[in-house]
Length: 99
View (cartoon, rainbow, N blue to C red):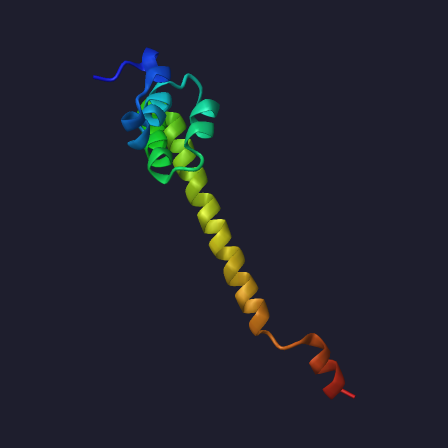
């Protein structure tokens, strides 16, 4: 059993399996703290996202979901525009042939 009040007493084996880090994750009291704990660990980041989603109000979850997808769509459109602009002939090319 894991006692979150005893993290400082983690054994070498606990630390080897990162049990102390996971305990710190579950003991976090703010989203900022959670982010700092998980920023360098992909599995912990995913776990924190799941915790957030499970605890967030449905309206807030919907707003975050739509914002995330709007950003993805905007990035896609911007990339598409850049690609199309790169394929256009140089405007100066037309000027040199019109004289």
